[in-house]
Image (cartoon, rainbow, N blue to C red; front, side):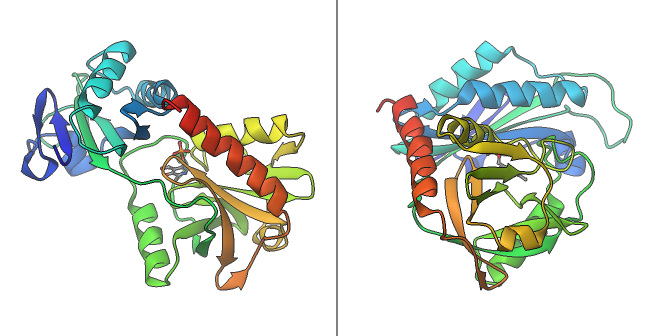
Length: 279
Ligand code: PLP
């Protein structure tokens, strides 16, 4: 298959699938999602993503209609049906189905999966960014389907010929529209604390691990846009991009002063992806 859509047991091409209007994802965005890279038919870090999905659903009182093992087994079987060496697996669980009402009954959630061909681009290519006012609420740590500010920010980046928008809240950098942002200054990696204003990214956790292993001090604290502009490197991390260095923010060149540390971190992140997906 060129791609695959799955909805509560039904399978087909994504563009031919339909979901009922009663799905709470449809009218409230009432659900939680995950995105996973897949290479060689092996989903990368699947258990970490599934753990985050279950934790988020538990926080929101959303009931996932299967256990973690069954979900992993299902995803691993579905990826084999899509003809591509690298793939992107998107899956979400909505709160379930009902006529539209803010008040909910506890019912089984609906599981939706989409698998599409994907290519991890060139990690050494720098990305250009724009800043964007962080108008999101205080549940950014939960990967909910409600992504309107991120959609607007990503579109704003595109319209400004940039690859990513970096959110600024009260003068402080939080994260990107779909990535985490960290900065390197000398031997220090600074990244926003994993509080309610950022998503604690799986790739961010890997970056922290490898930075520590490379002898870099990691400091989880807030930092201002001015500090980012002066950083040796500005790094973005996410499932899809793995890790990239930022080349410019709002048209002003940044980073490029710590190329060897960036290359080492990049190498560690990429090697882990390759080694974990069959070498
Ligand atoms: N922050 C936001 C807002 C995101 O949407 C994402 C990924 O989609 C990330 C951070 C990075 O998270 P992860 O590394 O788990 O992909």
